Amino acid sequence: MAGLLKEIDERRAKRALSENKIPDEVVARLMKAATYAPCCFNSQPWR
Image (cartoon, rainbow, N blue to C red; front, side):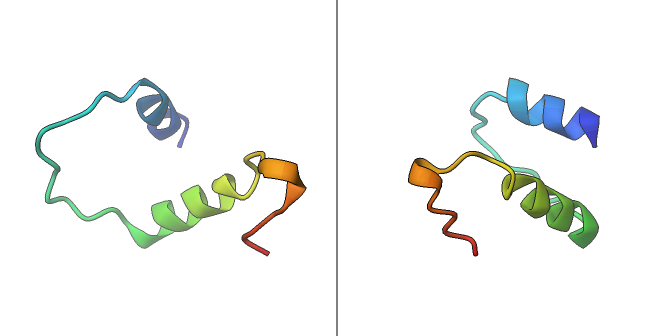
C-alpha cells in the first residue's frame, strides 16, 4: 500500500490509461484512507 501511495504522490499526467482492473479491496482501502483527508470547514461530506 505504501508503494501505491508513493506512486499517487509522484504521479504525472499520462496520455493513456491502463486497461488493468484495480482489485476491489485496494479501492476500498483507498476510499477509507480518503476519509482521513482534511475537508473545508470540517464539513465531512462523506458522512
